[in-house]
Image (cartoon, rainbow, N blue to C red; front, side):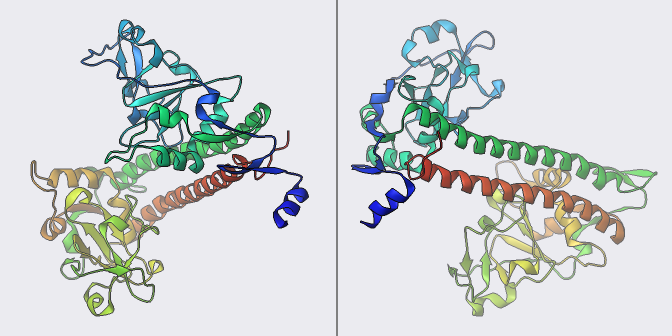
Length: 435
């Protein structure tokens, strides 16, 4: 009764279906009912790719999480036109979709006009919607929704490697709005996608600008006129090239190899390499704690600096600030304590995200060996040292760019949450669009 009253208040009437309640004027259909073709078969093998005047080959690696295919022609392989013509049912047209059916099953790619008449690999399935029944850009949003992805997972074959077959895909049921309503829903969701894409572009352009500025500031400094040659190139004559270990207090220390426990915020957080992003920030999605009796020797103090010492993450860095709460650091990391009278941690942080540092790390890794840089090697790392005031100026300039990047990243997260919420209500008819 309460539900009926609620529906009357909103002016929406619902009907019960096997996939849940949907508006009375929507249909519940199988995917095959709104498609001209859902098709997959093994295509060409032992093919010789061509460089010019060939047909682009769409493959799963080119599909982004947003349903878009790579726009970079250099990322595509090209097959002879004759080969493509031999497989007409896998030739793609604008508004078609490709679905990855093995391994990373469920990635969906929308075919834009620039890929008209492209072909696809055997690990993809072609979905060609009936344009008289379904608006392709609405279907794209539906395919990207949690609703569809959950149905796809339920319908997939129960094997070690997840896979979906054409009959299983065709049988998936979905709620279908009227065509004009599909277009309005797609328009709203696409607007959010476009705002997210613009934010991504701002982030990438800002990162590129920071790279150029970092290169200049870390070699030319601020206001210098005379320079000298060093192992990282020319630097101001007033600067020194000096070993990291000579600018730190005490000896470097290795992290704790003790058991961690599930998150308990009354205990110190146990920082592992996997908790640190490439940007040197702590993840909030992963959290382990450490018992206090194990933690004391490994508790981080303001300004402490961590370096990852082995494995695929070797070279990753983290600068501890009190804002991160009480933390202890795990094994496979090495702690340095920069002397703030000689080396500012924020200057070191910026330096360890520069090409100068990345090139040094690459040079330290031995071919064929497990990636590893030990405490002594990190201690011998050379770096340029401006005077403290100039270190602060350089770090402040670069940190201001980091702050702008963080603002844009937060804006992107808000857009993603908005999109997720809109998809949940618009694609199920819980909220109807004005038409």
